[in-house]
Length: 484
Image 1 (cartoon, rainbow, N blue to C red):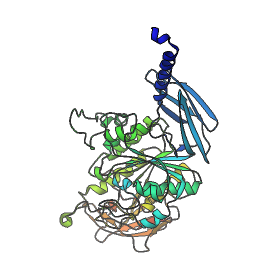
Image 2 (spheres, rainbow, N blue to C red):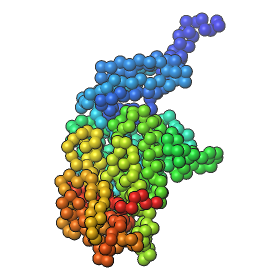
Image 3 (cartoon, rainbow, N blue to C red):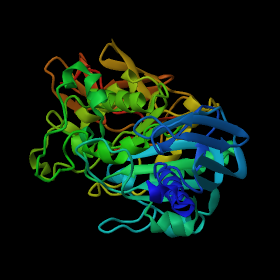
Image 4 (cartoon, rainbow, N blue to C red):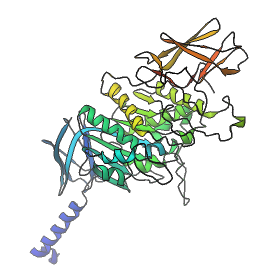
């Protein structure tokens, strides 16, 4: 007690306490210099400080104050922000002061999935670069397009912060290439940025070869009754595999959940190709992400996986047993069952049917951007190709009607329509002739006098030419709905 009363000792003790409080002020890794904050909606800012400490957040003329809870966690919400190219600073005070600089306000999107989302613009070990990679990289100087990369991590429980990441950076030839940022996400973001003339922030979190289950939070599985029993295994001292449910969500999504964004992009499915309930798993993923973000039903746009020679020995190949067309059907069901979702088709973007990574990621990004421009930003653009609507039988012909036929139906290469098959009462599908007649397609085949069903692009190698006037390809389909 005598020592504590000494003025110098007392001052030292108070200084130590003050330093301790200051040292505890921390924000998640997703906040940083060069970031983009989402416009036109409330923006959560959160972190940790000393228990019960006062915290003040200042940005763009706003000043928000709160107190940390007993565990030191705090959160404030900035009121809606206006898009701005003017660099601003985010200041957080709680004994100590943290300042993040060069911050813009615009549109923020999350991109996730497996290797086709992960594929960068330039070279990657074991893969070919995207088309025109050198020219695209040389032209990739967009200082108002900002990129953040989540690195690969696993966790058996939800983490509060990222352990491995590449912090927010201005997009240029060097940053885009050096961190191997997603090509599909970059081309999407670039088009949104140039079309809307607002800053864009892209958060990339993907891992090649992974299934959908590891990316899904527990609350997502619980939202789908048939999947509710799926849980994270108890690994004990065993190594955590990246195939286990929720382990990628826990490490690579949970730490950024809540960071204000406009929507999400998803390019995954090759590793789930044999699933018969992938549409339900997609519903679980989207529902789970929307619940943990607590932003409502934000847009979710995804890529239908491309044709590929999954079955290498084609001597006994049968479309009746090929899981790929049935998986395409699962993805088509998902886009119809999930609110504010959209899907692009990529059957026409394959340059090598022996390469599971199509190189034309610029067009993938463009088509995803069309969905966003159409559905999210309400521009007058065509964002979807023809989708089967209904069939009627007229004599020996099956007459098909389609949705999304703005500009009419067309053969993309000007040649006769391809990859249609027709079955009669015996259920055997044979190659068919298909012709565009007005707003319909008429399908017939020699020997099939009484058609019963039509399949389109029902083959792992199918690269059909049916499109709409905007050049967007038709979805693979069967008139035998549903197919188990």
